[in-house]
Length: 150
Image: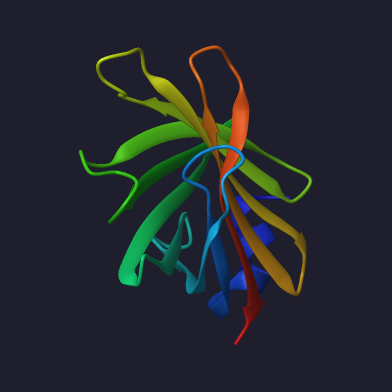
């Protein structure tokens, strides 16, 4: 199944909730959220726009996905997680789960990893998960957004 075939049923508007964990073991910052899935570039690019809030302040972001031979490429940027610009990451599509991985600077130490998963395995639920990865490889859930169709 291609990326476009997988995500076509998800086109449109979604609403749900967003959970953000600042530190492992801490309570999540919960907020309402929305998502919109659309296509451009003659259906070669999938756009996932999303919103949430942090401490009552509105936030929003964008993930652009394009299928490549043997994988998926993503451009990601949002108002809170990516203060230094866009990230361009690669990943894969397997059985309804889109996964892209990359890293971000964490001065004065080494870069940290980040993984984004878009879970499209259920036709009536869209999930967006983001994981923080320490330089030692320890992964922790940082964001969980769960949406239902509007």
